[in-house]
Length: 73
Image 1 (cartoon, rainbow, N blue to C red):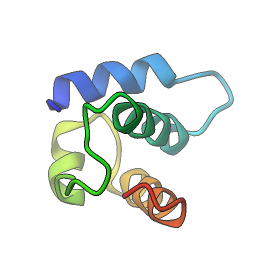
Image 2 (spheres, helix red, strand yellow):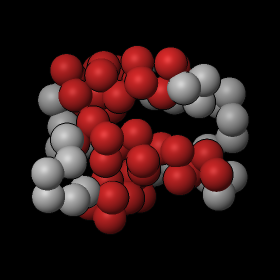
Image 3 (cartoon, rainbow, N blue to C red):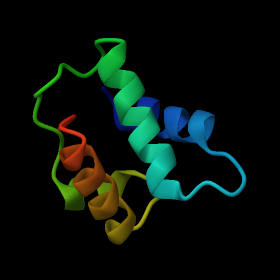
């Protein structure tokens, strides 16, 4: 998955009143459910995601912890 495609999905899943980390979680979970990202596939590093996505490092870290807790990454 490209960073541009992931950014578009983040925009798609962004909703008023929903934290950005949830929109990123939803974008990644959707990509897994469609096979764009294979379950268990290694994602880019936190810093790489932060440098390519319109999100802070803290937001990305929170998302990755949530995905890990949900056993999606």
